[in-house]
Image 1 (cartoon, rainbow over the protein chains, first blue to last red):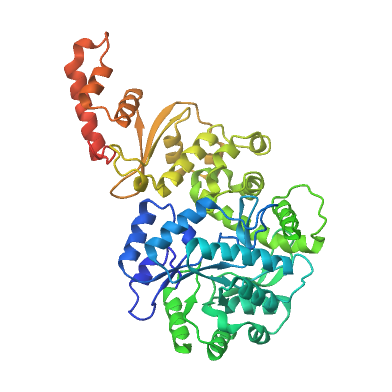
Image 2: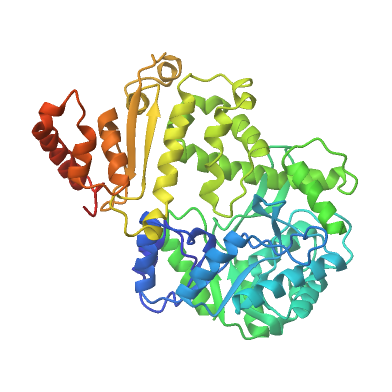
Length: 275
Length: 248
């Protein structure tokens, strides 16, 4: 499960074996003090392995002219301290852009699927793997715009990034479902087109149908929320992936609507059954 | 300059609602980006409403427009999400806000107080500054309006929202000591007199009680040394009990 402050107590009290590791958003645990620090120490003392899944490494950001890569030194230094404390087996982030001109956008903005973008993303990943001396996984993000006419289909874009940067894949099966519906393709065909040998970790989550954008009143087919129950089709995608390749870790990604924790526990059990 | 760089400049311009000549992003792409704009605003509105909860009570009806303008003009440059509120006090004091929205005169100080509490709650000063005599997670605020009384008024459930918004508050200065308690890790506040602020500044410099007494005594009060010593003793004991003076 993802360690979220509203779930921390529940997770630490779960029956043994149901949750074998926890994913953390590392940006929430760097430069920490007060209650955040105290709670984090409590989790650390529980000896549950922690794996960082970032949101702000922004591997999809194009560097300024004359630079090969782009990064935020303050963030990297904070993460380095955190990683040395928790000693994770790998870390991950999304194929997305969350920082432009040192401004943090507070959401995962898609990266246009071009050959140039493959090179830029791969360079940023190689830099991070070198800086942290740690294996990196990229996550296939959900996206609501191609931004510009794509030069590559989604699977080719991801495969080329994986090959160019020699990193692993964090396959989010809910994102596959969301994108397949929103952009009109077959989720199974998409999974079959991926280099599945590179899958190390899987995310599974819920989503919201028919999100109405209040700015322009347009209705989006599905919004990736991490706050709703997992539907059967998404469980089926997890089963499909596990039948095709060996994966090391699966995460139930839940970021909001924690009210009914028993329902979340049922989802954990359903995932474990598939595995 | 890479094409990706140029696309991302246009994305930024669109998200921040900046006047720009969009050469790469089509109208359709910009419409699609509005989904992200709405999601970013939704999260920020919620987060800032909980962090600046008393300001939110006063600005509720204008909140969405305020946060939209704030994010467009003071976007966060920190990877830490809570820092999204860092520039909010500056924004509230800016012409950009003041020329567009209606607000009570004390709002700037109220927002500054609320941001101070958020900042201290998250501060890692205690991790960086472990040998400090004083609890390192604190701030002294000097206000022209009675912010603590205003907050108590806004918290009063017996007062209607309408009255809360319309009530005039007279200027009445107060000095506040805001700190994170080392035991409960909660943010606490108490009123300070000018003389206590002076003592705290001496304590910050690492001065002993004798040295502080010496500095507090002048020609006018030289006959009251023993009384000053005693008052200082009581003050230091109080500061210890409040987990403000931690290694003395």
